[in-house]
Length: 261
Image (tube, rainbow, N blue to C red; front, side, top):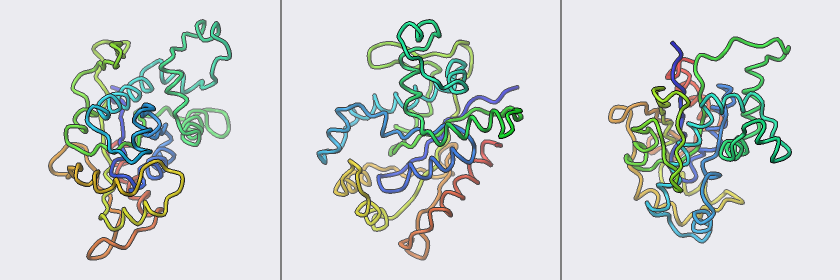
């Protein structure tokens, strides 16, 4: 029996390295990676760029979009598109190939290095093909700050409604929904603030870290299902930053174990 697809959420506050670690996991497991920031609507990006914290009204449609995108890309149509990622050049060609707008948009959000790794997994360097993967999966970097947000990302139903009323469902209506896993990148305020202050070209303001930390409900491996905690700091006060390779390596090891990859 084929294992149901997995959605891996690389989570934490701004400055924790969600995108870097998420891409590292995806490349190691040879699965797609999407930065959840790329799924924010323009209004959310504008608010964050102006230093305004998001509200639940802002976040819930975005969280729905994260899970809907993962469901879509691990559906049969999504997997076929991932294996043949060339986009149609004309509207007629798109219609002939039954490429839906949502699917095409989702494909554009996948990090190219992770897509290349997936295609390498499928074909093999010699072009002869490799053993099919036992479990399809996708990695998304997403803050997932509260228990409620994480429960939404886990999904209680197999179908998901878009803001305009449309629904994305599996072709087989009785097919189980994807299983969600979380990799929580845990860091102290001092460490996170230092990382944020040295970042360039990102819309999140360092002044918003306290807002995120006040919202954060830390997940614990014993309290919630499918939680893996990876510490960013070391030492008695966890203020000394661990190397990037060490953090990514631990995250890969934990997810490989959980997925049986």
